Image (cartoon, rainbow, N blue to C red; front, side, top):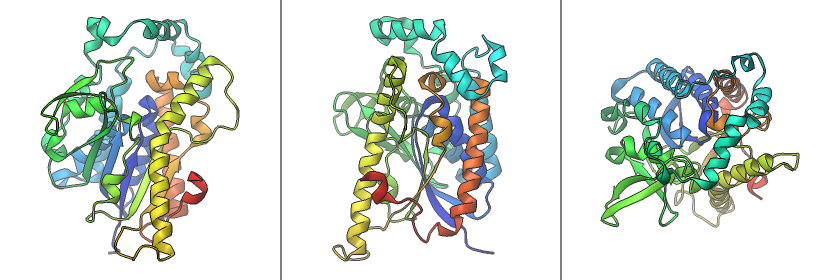
Length: 346
């Protein structure tokens, strides 16, 4: 039997757009040549990663992980009554995105967010994801078998990244990783370094997701597959208020990833030209699975509003993108990178 190709997964956040990552993972898990060695996740990426880790730990199978992801996204699609306009379901995601952007309900919600803090209303204390996250199998998620799993959250006071690993992971860190500050109150978690409870927001503000836990671990392979759901490039300049706000969000949630990739590129260049001795630093091989063509047609509204039709389309797109990656790049995994970092970050 051929040796499996070991990879790390870096899973971005992006609300309901994380259904794209669901599709990617579903296809990768079905690939017999792939072994998932490590996972770093932020927000929706954390939820997807937790579902995979919980299933693969303690001898679980890839099929168990696929079933766990199916359960997770069935629960997410049921968070809200998403069928207030069932006729929308017959349209493509781009049409649904436009309709949601200009829905009076969402316009009112966005207006209220500018004047009312989550701390002003009692119902904002409960994140609707809590009922899902609390049902995860933390004995498996925190154990030392299966993929190494890292959860990213942002310390509100310092603005710095905190990465939760192993027994540090629980419902609170996962909810913190997906805590949008305009919608939910910060999640309080004890920090042994400061000796007090600290407040945490979505990890995307400081790392979307963090690559260092994957690239600095000597037990993990050098290959990192980034499942990218926030478009890096938009050809058209945004002009409406909604378009501008959406693009600002995309840029800010990509900035930390670009900085980490630039650092990796510098290390790789120094290893290649001899300025760093081979073996002193890991030669990191970056790969990426994305569908910017679809993502640029969606919007902030489709991130926060888990519409079943959009979720289904995103999952299918993720499966197709993963299939294309395997057809095009599987032979390069554990051999060479398939992303031109110099071109991407410079």
